[in-house]
Image (cartoon, rainbow, N blue to C red):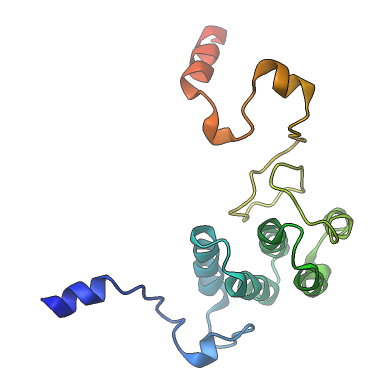
Length: 168
């Protein structure tokens, strides 16, 4: 019985426990399944930089531009102003799969990083961005005048629902 309790308390990452699979650029994984696992892992543990780098490598190996861009965006968001060298190296790795617009965005933010409350190109596989289509600046006069919340999770959904019902 005690062994079963100990087993339940152990954090196990199946298929990622062998030394050859802990590399920065693992070669023994099923790329699609590994990318999915790493995406979920990064969502749960955003500060896990090794998994961010592995996720970018998986996206590159899949040759999927949306996944490359989303993985880069999540890395840039986590690092903030820190880690310019790793941002530059991962950007260089992902450059062939980025659009001109995405490349321009990352070059513009290479030195200062990316802030979550700033506009960025659409990233459908990003798990850490707020998915903003416009700027959300704390100094925005409209946001201050109306007392608007900066995070979508802080919105009063009952008030929004009542406004929608009034319009219908």
